[in-house]
Length: 469
Image (cartoon, rainbow, N blue to C red):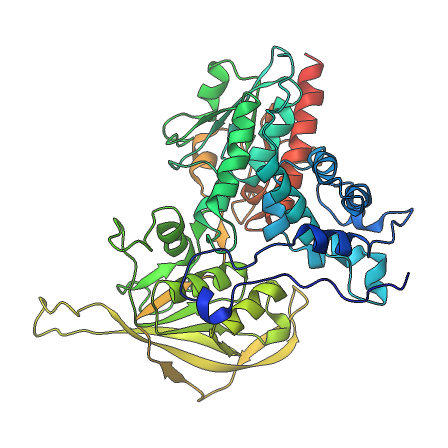
């Protein structure tokens, strides 16, 4: 049989339609298309794709089951190593991980591994009604701080081994960045809720509205009888540029903007916590979060949305698929530009003027790329005298986040690096005995799948530690 050189395309909503709704953009494979795509897999003996997966999903094995139309068996293979397959199939950067190692990709397009994972997980969620097997208790208790991808993964792996696990979440809904950071049109919240419900069926307790470091400390968790603690509290502290005007009304961090929309439902007709309606928006940054913020602003009614990024398209860190979707929806990319000041309306003669303090524009300077910097990317250099102003009403800063210092400040002996990330060894163990950490709380903002890998590693280490007690 001749090799099909290109992936089966993913069906999507029409750009002109989806730009005005929060429904999922990608519509998913049919059974027939999934089998066609699976038949592109060469079933390599050395399985290079597995080495590119941070949680080591048995990729050729699950794809072989898809070829046979045995979709539930394929799901069971994926779930041996992944706690969140429906999530990973949607938001993981497969193009730089498993698919980048695909042998077929040497000459042609790699197998659509992520698309097949999504299909299999969705098939399971639609057709399976069986409850997960709950193992016999092993007598040990573990606390998890944070219900994001690293915390949920660690909780799931430990629960499957018989541990009594409690997850403590600061917000009112479990899921971490999966619910507050990633928009509905990329990751429907019912999918996250389904994954959380599966963990509860395994016996995991999830306590929301509990801020570790304030409501409870890590030391108090040990006093409550927990024998180990995993910290997966994420990186929710936004960074700003420290340029003039960042205090004006209408300037948001991407974290706040997306949290208000995703978790607090600011897109509703009568929102409890409104963000913006209409106007022009500038999103500063070029990562996946910037794409999410820009596309969310469009769906909230912005008449024009700009991406302002100081490097070129080649250096843009966002996933290619997300950039393409944003372009199709009409997002205006202003590349090789860097903000130097946010402008606002001020009327000192009338402090009661309701327009006082609101954003009126963002002043940028044009850039050119010089020599590579420490990250290996060419360093952007300002072009003198090239300043210009974009007329906008809202500015969203999406230039990265750092771990919140609350846990560090309330936990004696917990060492962190210069960026606030918790320092861990190769087993995920911190400087505190029986305290483990992983995900964005350690690395700063990174991918969902890398956070899951860290949670998986910590679960293995915790099991080895407590098995000796």
